[in-house]
Image 1: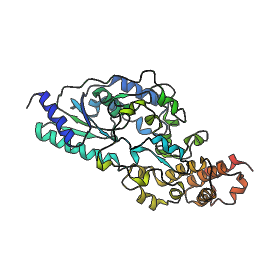
Image 2: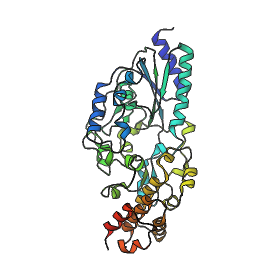
Image 3: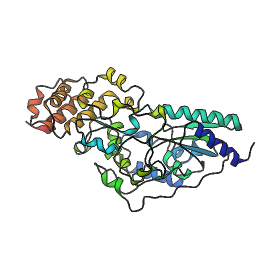
Image 4: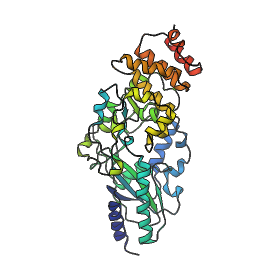
Amino acid sequence: MAAPDNVKTAIIAEATAQGFDVCRIVDATTQDAAGAGLRAFVDAQHHGQMQWMETRMDERAAPQKLWPEAQSIIMLGVNYGPDSDPLAALQETDKGVISVYAQRRDYHDVIKKKLKALARAVVAQTGAEVKVFVDTAPVMEKPLAMRAGLGWQGKHTNLVSRDFGSWLFLGSVFTTLDLPPDDTEADHCGACTACLDICPTNAFPAPYKIDARRCISYLTIEHKGMIERELRPLMGNHIYGCDDCLAACPWNKFAQKAEETKLALQSDYDRPDLIALSKLDDAAFRIFFAGTPIKRAGRDNFIRNVLMALGNMDIPTPAHIAAVRARLEDEAELVRASAIWALGQMTDMSGAEILNMVGARGPLVDEELAQLGN
């Protein structure tokens, strides 16, 4: 076999050929600090309903517990930099705001194909064993990426790159090859707190720590059921994910527009009309968001988010109010209850008045009606 340095050079060249924007190497030894941080996060219940974070924690903290034969990890990034400032969409309160990463084809599918192609090339060239991972396995991508030198975890806990700012999709190829590791990236946040200051829900109890239960990304994607009452008005017009802390980072001045055509932004998901979205039934939801990460959220939870945004509008029109009233007869109780809250925000209607328009009762509906009073 060729010298490790030459093998590494060949792997980086192949990664570039497959469309990865950055490729660096980290050894597969135990990540003690990252594991301790994960345990503290879970012990504080900051993971909310994400029970999967509790399971297989040892494997998340130590790659060799996930795959004992692994010697090196090839960490890879694909730039998904937006065309414009995502924060501008927050001012159009009659439109929904979808996170930049979700306004395109599901990155899991696109990145995994690239990872598999790279892995096949590594096997062909070296005969080594490989395993590929992109987000869905018990792998702590961000700490690994920092150790590999792709960037550093900022005070918002997300990865920041000096070359690509906040906008990198991550993937990894575990291998039995013993490759020369790259240097860890230093923290370049300094005294800046822009990402912490902009968070609408104060989801950061301290720099470098996040309480997912208050994070809009978590609330609109992972959280099932009604959202905490105090957080609803703070969500603004976010309907799937949130880029506020990412977009506020000053390192984005070095960010580049994404070049991967398979991850091109799709105009249908850029500030979509809230009234149109509120009318989606399950079949229409699946068709409209086919091939995107949004479909995995499920129609009912997504319409809940849309209704939260409608309730938060600056100046609701009769058409917006009518769209919310229509959802009072929705088949899903979660949607009906969310519509009651939104209608209460948009009008002076009492619970007794709304009761006559609700399609069916239930504990969620009754709770929202009780909050409005008579």
